[in-house]
Length: 70
View (cartoon, rainbow, N blue to C red):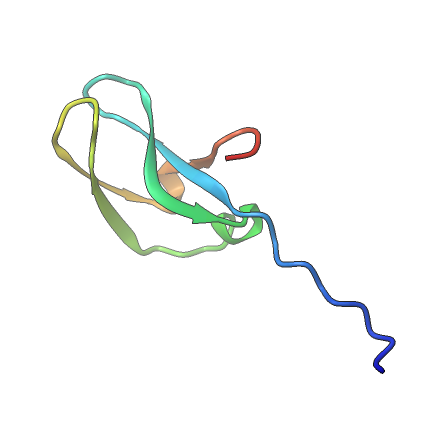
């Protein structure tokens, strides 16, 4: 039997961005561990906003992690 403790996976939290039209915070549909959002990833993502019904394009620079558990 191994004495190495199992490493728990990081807790995933919702990624949020701000709707350009309403100014409301909107979940992007992605969940991520907070440390990964801080990486220098320049990828862009899109999602349909439930506030204005338009498609928003965003990058990690525009996003934040929702406070508290999902």
